Structure formats: structure tokens, C-alpha cells
Amino acid sequence: MEYVSRVPRPPLDGLIDDLYYLQGEPPYTRLTLPPSPSALLIVNLGAPFRIRAGTDIETAEYADGCVITMPTRAYEFGYPPGTRSVGGHFKPWGLAPFLPIPATELCDRPVTIEQVWGRPAIAELRDRLATAAGPHEMLTLLEEELMRRLRETTGLGLVRHTSNVIAATSGAVAIGDLSKAAGVSSTHLAQRFKELIGITPKRLARTHRFTATVFPINPAEPIDWGDLAGGAGYFDQAHFGHEFRAFTGLTPTRYIEVRRRFLHEHPGHVLDGWPLPAD
Image (cartoon, rainbow, N blue to C red):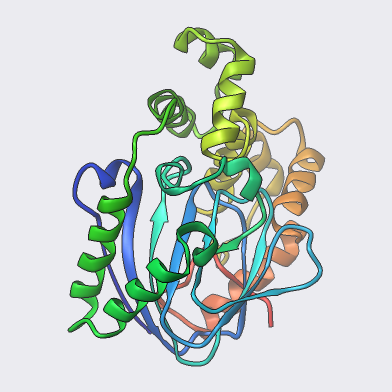
């Protein structure tokens, strides 16, 4: 698969980790993506793709693209053959300035990009992207669209600063200390988080801790799950196992089996690491 990415210019770089272009044959028709502290915007230029989010049993089809605020559960992504899209990996709070509604209303509920920005605007954007000279021009067009839509968002500074503290500690910080340091009540802080990220600070901290613990695992090496859980601050291995199933839908052992399969079948693939084959 061809994958081109770049960090957008300020001030978008404070909201977005990278803008990307993706085209080619997916490694699997279905991938499971465990939740991570990030949000996603996709402008689809190929055949429709499908997503099963949260605890939903049914999948939904997305033709024009989708917006996914920070998830709390794994979601399943169904790629069409010859996928082609442009999008952005956003920081947990990064979508807030571009959404017409509070992020909490979209938590684990992906919506089409048309529902967010309207059909005429998205049709025009997709047409311009489809006729662009190449990936870099497409990323410039998307960046310009985001710059044009950027708006002031109440409470963004508070949420961004507090989220950065949570990230810097890999989630190992007392939420009560965060609200005191910010000079606001814990209720106010939680409300701002739900409005701009879609979840509470406590849930964000849980996601950071889980990601920081699990993502670096080398599936090719032996793993002492007890030591791993203790080092990450979980009460015990049982607590860690519960978190594992809550976040991924898999047991730790099954997770390693799937990771090993992916890396064996697609070594060095652009999507290796976090996505898991669901086929």
C-alpha cells in the first residue's frame, strides 16, 4: 500500500498528529483497531468501507468518509479492494474545533463526514481531491479545508493542557490533582472533556495507560504478563486481563497470537503494530 503523511502547519499541528494519503490493497479485508488516545477523520475516494463500532453487532457503510472521535472500545474496519482515502490522525481533542455538536454525542458512534460538514461541501472537496495532481497536493487541499473550518473552541486550552499532562505520565496521574492544578472543579473538568474529546479525564488516563503498556509489546519475545501488569500499575494480573478484554475484546494470549500472525504474514507493512486481523 502507498502511504504518504506529513504534519500540518500551525495551528493545525496542535490538533492533528498527521495528515495522510492511503491507496492500495489492504492486507486484510477486515481489521480490528483497539482504542488509542486519538481521533480520526477520513475522506473516502474509493469504494465504500464498513465500520462496526463499540458493542454494535451490525456494521455500517461509509461512502464519503467518516469522523471517529476518541473510541472507548475496539472497532472493526472493513476495507474495500483498492482502498483510496485522505485523512488525518487527530489528537484526542483535535476534532472539537471542526464538529458542530459535542464530541460526547459521537462517542463510539462514527458518523459520515457528510453529516458533519454537509453534502455540498463534501461533494466539492471530494471532487477537488480526486482530480488533484498527486498525494502531496491532496494533503495540501485537505489542510486548506481544515484551516478554513478552524474555529475558536471554549475550554480547548484547558483540555489540551490537562490531556498533555495525562499523556506525559502515561495515565498514571490522580485526576483530582489535575483539576486542582487547573483551578477548576472535577465536575467542570469532566464536562469539558466530554464536550471536546467525548470521554472523561479518567477514561483518557485509562486509555493512555493501556496503550503505553500494550503497544510496545514485542510479540516475537516471551512475555511475563504479571511483571507487565505490575510495572504498569495495575492492581494485579486479573485486573489487567479485564482491561485487556474491555479494550480489545481479546484475551492477552489471543492478542499476541493475532499480532504474530499479522507480523508473519505482512512483515514491514505500513499498518503493522496496532491494527489486528479480523478475517
